[in-house]
Amino acid sequence: MDQGSNSHVKALVFDVFGTVVDWRKSITREIVEVGKKFGIDGDWQAFADR
Image (cartoon, rainbow, N blue to C red; front, side, top):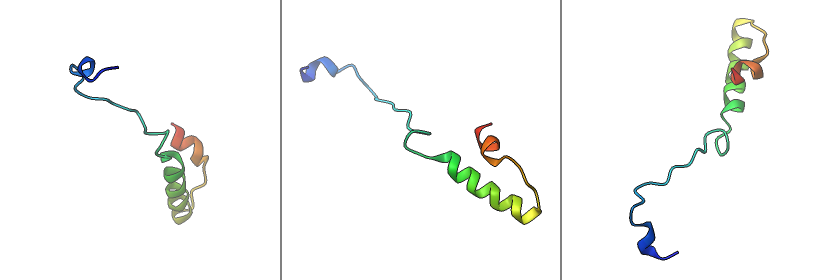
């Protein structure tokens, strides 16, 4: 592919959230701590998924 054929491309966009960033584990870890602090038990993984 020659350089001239890409001259109309203005941006390349990638969805990395959930692939590169493991947000579910960080949300689950934090809400577990909040639950412990306030005496609340729950399915925190399901909470993060919702």
